[in-house]
Image (tube, rainbow, N blue to C red; front, top):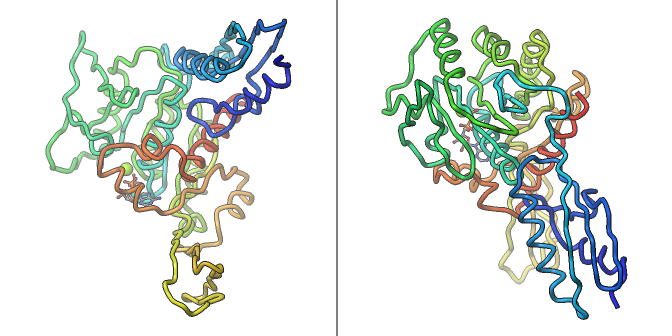
Length: 366
Ligand SMILES: Nc1ncnc2c1ncn2[C@@H]1O[C@H](COP(=O)(O)OP(=O)(O)O)[C@@H](O)[C@H]1O
Ligand SMILES: [Mg+2]
């Protein structure tokens, strides 16, 4: 005989699609009604995306199918529309527009942005707009350089990896770097922004051009952002960069959802092939412990800044994630397959999961 607590135990073994947390601890199970072997489940999901409901239903039915005696299961979903937060973005049909910004180029803004978008796309409808006119990297990051089609003067986004994508890079193919000046950039971006047929989206993630100057300020204002995320490296976080970024967004009343520290450290794992038993060894100032099997793990701070956390406390912006340096991350950019879609169970993907839940909970409270 199956009891209610057996059911809970079974549900605890099921992960929410795209996350490493189980569906019970996620708090989405609203009702469990068990009469003899008839089970009635009510599940509440926030996303307006039906694909999570379908997937959850399959996962649950699959698990319960093996029970003897057989449990007849009915699952109903309560879809909590995230639009009920009363906020609507400047583009009809899009719930949240979030910018990913950095004070400097080369800190991994685009890398973080595409992985954030890809992680969100596991459970929601996501668009990605690459507004980095000087270095559009979206075509490379998703391995697609098709030219968008037009529908009544509106560009139809490229669809890949279950996301809708748009970039200057799709329009301006070729290797010539854009050398447009500020006012032209703003004008062109405005037109560009208004003329994409996004359809209904839960999130539009924008890869802003690097910097905190006039272009970025105008864009942030024009785009009516619901929030911004600032990407930095540990070295630079100590400098003026994050403060400049926060000031820029505060000027235009865009809530800063958090700072993401990229390239925070390099983790090296190895094994010593020797009969000698090392207890530890030293590399620069790092003491590396070796276990009895000769294995070691070295966490190396490539940029030895004061760390994002103290700085984030000081300027009162939460640090919502730390992404370490990993050659697989840069390779995935070159291979055109976003890391979080390829390495589902890695610690970096888990960090992106955490970033997504931080962003969702911040948006709810805005
Ligand atoms: N955490 C990381 N680990 C390894 N390589 C990274 C990481 N973050 C970024 N990179 C690499 O660093 C380079 C710059 O990243 P990119 O996202 O293009 O920066 P930005 O958009 O800020 O100019 C790219 O080659 C990218 O693959
Ligand atoms: Mg970039």
